[in-house]
Amino acid sequence: MSESQTFEDVTIYSHQHTTIQGLGIMRSLLGYSRIEARRVTVKVESYAQYTRAVSVAFVPRGKRSERSYNEASRVTTVILKGYDHPDVPHKIGSGPEPLLDEKWHEEFALFLKDYRLKPSVEVLLDLREDDTKPIHPPPSIPSYRPAKAVQFLEGKALSVWEGQPVVREHLRRERNKAIVRAKREEVLRLTGKLECEACGFDFTAFYGIDFCEVHHLRPLAENHGAVETKLEELAVVCSNCHRVIHRRSPFLTIQELRAIIQSRRV
Image 1 (tube, rainbow, N blue to C red):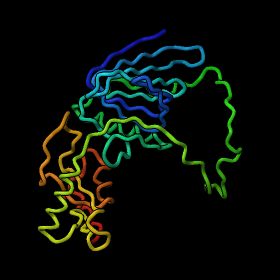
Image 2: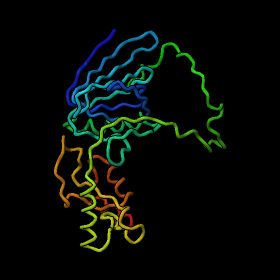
Image 3: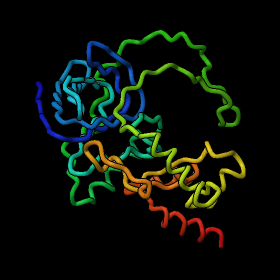
Image 4: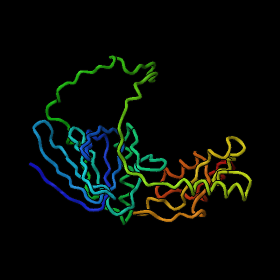
């Protein structure tokens, strides 16, 4: 038995893609993924080994070619509409890059609960139910790693396996480095230093002028295409404050974060 649904102009969220293919290339992905799609078709099918499996074919925004991925043993696809590209839990920095987190289901449940409260948000499809476990256990695959990949002492991990090469495919909005340099130069010219506008950390006193970050006061994700950015729409911030600003959606303003920092210092 199978059923198919098609949606227009949506954002797709999923975790642990087994494969994703496009332009004749197949890639393996692991972790969070956010896909902004102008069209997506989701097909749910029943198989002998699994209660269901899902195939997702989509056309990314700004692209013409169709891409696809499949989920079977662990279906995680969620499709949202109505809010301008909300970030995944713990999403930090620019660009919807996949992130790894063992507590994805718990974090994403809280994330969805928050966005369901927004009147403009509509959850079109949520396939995260736990009825996707295999009816019959899948065939065992031999492992070439040592039997003790993780060593423990009193319940604490001392070593783990890391560094597995992973190809990631994602959409990101382009930043113009020229205006970032111009913002630094303007602040240096006016103040003679580069201080974080939230916490006051002075980069010129410790690291020089090349290590500060520049934050867009108007999130680029709110726009569906290229927009003009002016110097007054940028703020010099340190990496710590920049990460904290992006921990919440909508983002914290510089004034809100500055007030939080000052209240903690009292």
